[in-house]
Image 1 (cartoon, rainbow, N blue to C red):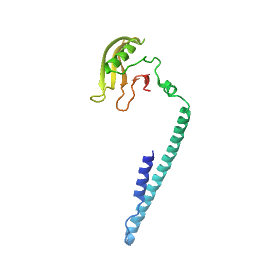
Image 2 (image 1 turned 30 degrees about the horizontal axis):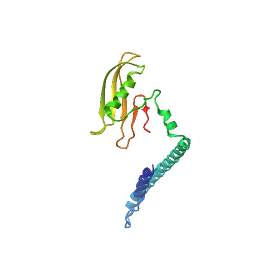
Image 3 (image 1 turned 90 degrees about the vertical axis):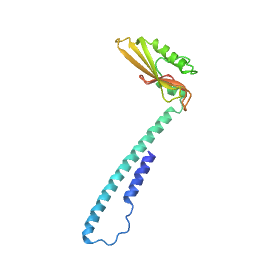
Image 4 (image 1 turned 90 degrees about the horizontal axis):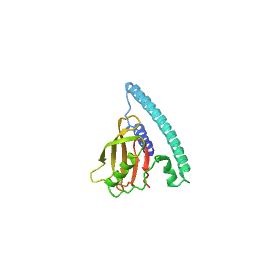
Length: 178
């Protein structure tokens, strides 16, 4: 937000900067200059209004941020993540190899009540040489018998990430990266 205010201030300063010293203008040009000055004054007023609005938004966001920090201060990390955990979590997940971790996720998923039968899987790596991936499971739904997919973000300890499994379709953690 500070960057936005800085950019607006720079635009404001550039728009308001003094023009090179003008020689005495003939009377016909004075009306043009007056019109240009009026236009610049209008632009300045609009920019001042926008800066005022953004300043108010920044103050509101800072208050909200302070309130969230105060609310989360006394809580241990486990309590903070509990609101984002899935109802049924994975047990002890080992992140030794992608194949082993994927097998644990698929085994957990196959036991869920909404899964009638698993049809296939597909994994997409983020980059070459990185184990973290999005893993997709195609399955037959026990509720309506239709073929459906489920997506998981499986993160390994690389690229600054901590190991964890995020169930993308339900927006919850199966294994929170502590």
